[in-house]
Length: 89
Image (cartoon, rainbow, N blue to C red; front, side, top):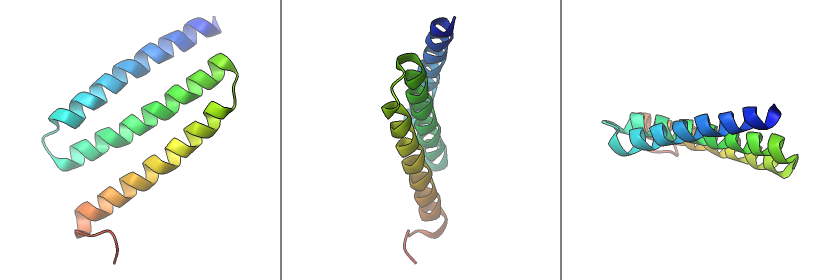
């Protein structure tokens, strides 16, 4: 039962990847593309967590944490750049 749930979760995450890549490529504005990249990093993090559950390897959890931190920092920097025109003050 757990294997089937993980397979379904992976399939739905793959569909989410496709939607985010489409929005990134066809996004009408820069904020839409930044939001697509932020969502994509969240989906990659979720995929690593599903792999951690499937294989029982804790290294995937560490990778998911690293991706979450990098995704948050990159989204914050991109939003600050869009608002102010520069990252540093």
